[in-house]
Image 1 (cartoon, helix red, strand yellow):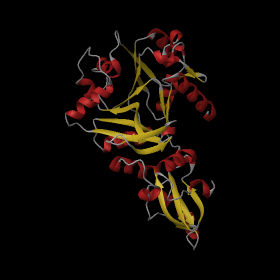
Image 2 (cartoon, helix red, strand yellow):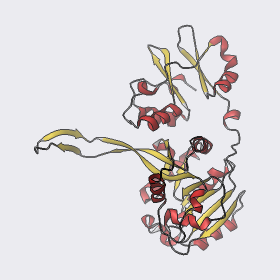
Image 3 (tube, helix red, strand yellow):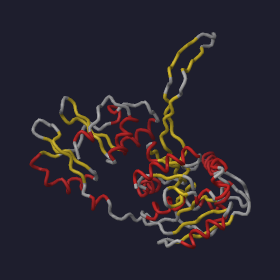
Image 4 (tube, helix red, strand yellow):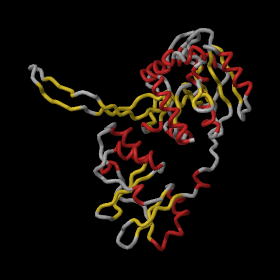
Length: 348
């Protein structure tokens, strides 16, 4: 790996850093000043900043750690133990002038060790998929193919890689097609179906699972893919003792017009030419405690975000786990579905 791949300027924005972390698939970037190592910034640093400050306009220098860990050239053979001891995934090797001459990563065996998340996964797979018409006139949304397999199988495969082998599909629209598909394929996991006789919403359908799940579980929509470390999200949820943790993605939207702000006297106060807005949005994936299922009113139509609002008003702890824009793929609309297909074909 080239050193330049993980170098970022301290005056770059936080969003620039998130994008570069995504692009390199590494968890850390380094800042140099006049060629010398001066700071490091990790995905964890960015996440903590967002959760504490909520300021998306921050610069790298606002967030970075200006006491970075490093090793000298004659210490590079100690790198593996050094990284394990300090719970880091990469360490820069510097010369006497503090110039970075190489980056050492934990080897692939350590990074790609089998995950053992192993919690139940609930997938809301009963919607009509009206935004994907005419595809959904023929197929239920979960079975729309993205590449060689349907979207819901992509979702299941990713969780299965983390050791989860128990899946619950809440089904309604064209449910027999969904059941027939999974009955025909070879699979290393178990799928149970929960029949929703009438649409109950993304929250109401959970009430049909009463008595079936007694541990922390993941709830996911059937039209999204989250490219993140699920184990890390789960550990964050448990450490924070949250009732629910919502996975939220950064979203950047450029307004294609000049935006005019008007003063109280009717005069132009400010003009912004094609501004870019940055904000976090709900991805449709949550870590949830089983108490939520047991307390749901039966046969009540309700969305899961409404359930979150209710618990929030009662003082329950609701957490947010922020991810970058490139870590979230959504196929809720046709143009987004095509983009998801292009990304998966490129990556796989």
